[in-house]
Amino acid sequence: MSRWRPPTPPASKYITPGGYRRMNEELQHLWKVKRPAVTKSVQEAAAQGDRSENAEYIYGKKMLREIDGRIRFLSRRLDDMVVVERAPDDTSRIFFGAYVELEGEDGVCVQHRIVGPDESDAKTGGISIDSPLARALLKKQVDDEVDVQTPAGLRCWIINKIWYDYEN
Image 1 (spheres, helix red, strand yellow):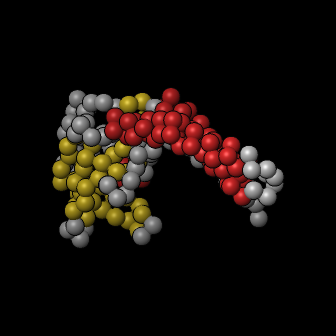
Image 2: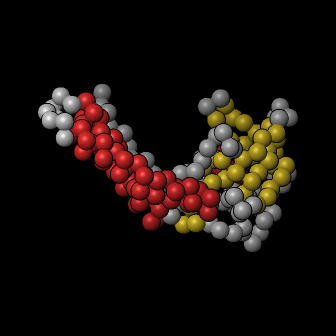
Image 3: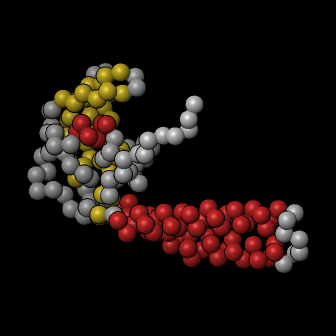
């Protein structure tokens, strides 16, 4: 049995202004605060002598590799991003950045926002534009029915409300 997996399709390059700001703040924090602190602790551990059995040195080097990897990822990703700063001309339809209120078959209402893959968060209701639900919702209007295949089976939602808010 092989461990090979087919490559994943590239993620969408869209992001909201708030998502871009948060990713940029993380990059600046890693580069200007966290990396210098870890570098200093590695230097102090290296000054203690034998590095082969120095756990602080080994752990610090590992942390530096992880920080550098995240910095490289964020730098490349932020360079390629397209920041969507305004609502579309037709705000009666669902596009990137839309807040949507959906009503399920059981009468329960949920709210989601269609965001970029780097800022999707189930806790806040942000769903990736690459997700099956978001793909099904795109270009729909209020009172349209949306059927989405989920691991639990086919789910049907009715769109109750659509709005845009680019302040967040």
